[in-house]
Image (cartoon, rainbow, N blue to C red; front, side):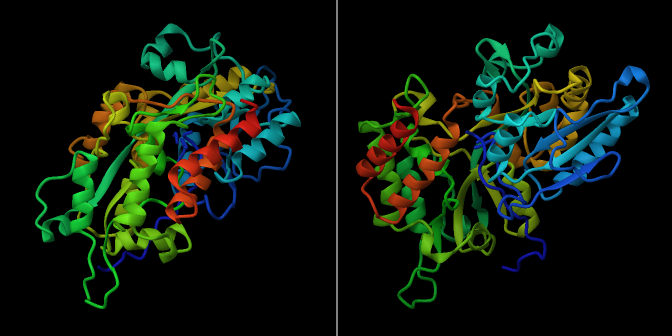
Length: 454
């Protein structure tokens, strides 16, 4: 199948855990490690241009300068934010906002260093790592800013996710979940007329779609693939088997048990027994891996919903989507779990201009404004009023929308980054047959205990 010239790049999972994990996410600038900045008044962001850098007072007639950091979910991140900031400036000409696009693989390190030095961004996009900053007093409580009218547009669960120690620490901005993308033509050619809804059905479909098409004795078409080192891929099966991601104190894994081993064993079976998953040795980076799906050599690809736009820009396959097949757990909260996340906009406690920063956050999270970003990237909003403005008639987004209404977001934790990094190690240990599922889980438990002490 002919590839389109434009290949959408990717971003590391830096969220979720997601979001947006996390939120994790996956857009262009992630792997390059590059950062870029832009603002409504063009100019470079200096090394120390954070919350403590602005001394202008809006009441004096001079412009207030704010910095806003966010990791990318699109290869057009800078362009989109330049447009939105320009709209903000029409209402607020005395507030200048400089946007810094921070790569996912370095955002935690850079934010931690900046906050510790007192030069953190005035406004930042936060996912599940935010409790670490809140615990250290780096994020401003929004209890005095977000009134009942503002809060009423959000589900209680979204506000709870964005809270720490009973204080609202950010305004929910993006919501995402995951679907199983699939190549409709490959299903049709194999005579598959119904999408799978359970593990067993998915396994059988994947077997039918794994073929040696040229007869050379080597597989050249696979039923599915899992994104390279994407931590939530094995986690899906672990939780769908009935285990929990976290222990009660959110300090270590909650799947060092029979259910956790059962779920990871199924993941291992798909890779190493059924051999229906594109092997890791077939590629060296995510762009090479995704090319197999774009070229029609892989039939199913579980991923976050905003990949819809990435895939459509990079390929002309006949794309469809269905809900992630359910696992064997007895309750739906576990059996139908799929990776979901919320990303929020937070204000630094170090900012000299909290009122101006709130004006920006409040403006950006208005339904008629935030839909500009969300619809461009392919996200949903935690505000149902915003979602009503987007994606009408979109078959793929409709699949994800069913899950957004009952979004299950894993709790935020001080140890979210450690969880993500160790899940990536667990993924490779099992996918490469370096450890048994039980040994991989025990190894992760020990690694997390060494970090948290619990």
